[in-house]
Image 1 (tube, one colour):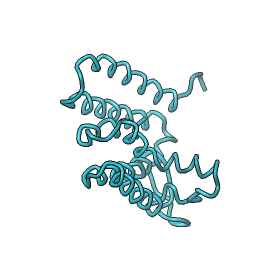
Image 2 (cartoon, rainbow, N blue to C red):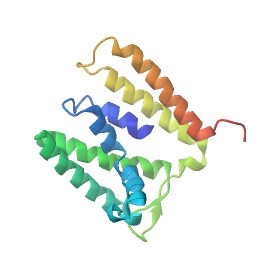
Image 3 (cartoon, helix red, strand yellow):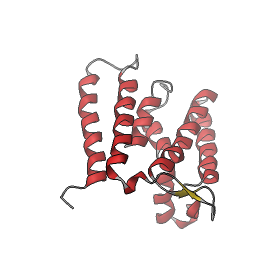
Image 4 (tube, one colour):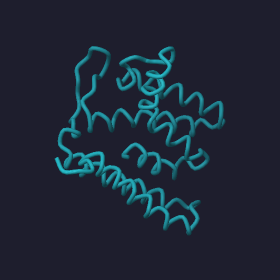
Length: 165
């Protein structure tokens, strides 16, 4: 949920980009994993969440954005959103910096409460930044509260599961 919250927050600065593009850019490394597993020819192997892999994906997404949206600032923002993915994942997970390189990260997934305490404010802040966007219509604010509660619930389910352990 934290990746989606960053996409929502980025919307304020990257207004011309469709929300679907921002959401895509925020989770591109995860999507690359899924697509690579389904279509091995498109796989990056174990590099999707390494610094080099994410930097490469950021460049590709930025170039696509430049071709599609024709503004360097939107391309740069798209690339930075892809790069944000690995930065956040190094807080929540333990991942290699490069293939066969050192594994780093706080691995907050191993401490569900700590992960939730980190992710919940990111969700709230991302929604607040999005909600204060001048181009957002007033009736949408009520939906944002529902979306925020849904995102927090999804994060809680991810961290704590549905049943008792």
